[in-house]
Amino acid sequence: MVCRYFELILDGRVDTVIRSLRGKLRLLTSTKHKIMSGIIRYYDNNRPYMKYDEYLRNGYPIGSGAIEGTCRHLVKDRMERTGMRWEIEGAQAIPNTRSAYINGEWNELIEFRINREQDCLSGQAV
Image 1 (cartoon, rainbow, N blue to C red):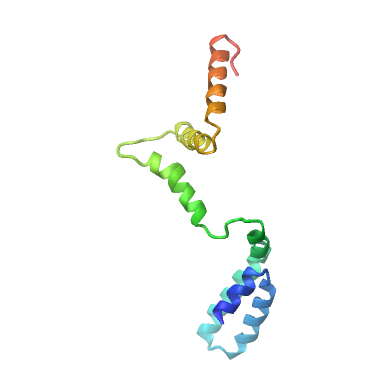
Image 2: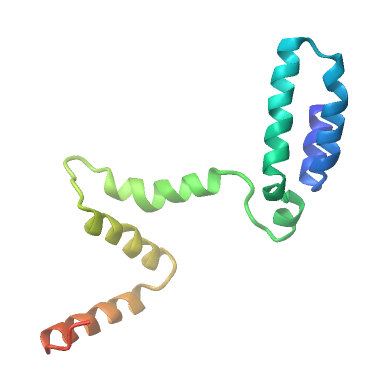
């Protein structure tokens, strides 16, 4: 049954899952009823964000793995080295610089930085 609910959710049919789970509530003991009610409440509250059929159709990731991997690759691997200490401005510069490099925007970033520095040196501070 879990696999069927999973398929329904991925097909964008969260309402069907909620209705089915509500129908099973009367058959449960009080402890299981409480747990199931929490699950139903979660699905009901998050229904507007559970458009998995739409997300999958558009090629969006639906799990947190892509985000977690990006955070590790973009931030943690560079910033959590032995003895490093960061101020907010310097810390933000690391992911900005790494994302420019990873996204193939390195040359544009360098050009921007050179132009900005030249403006500062010539008294035309930005």
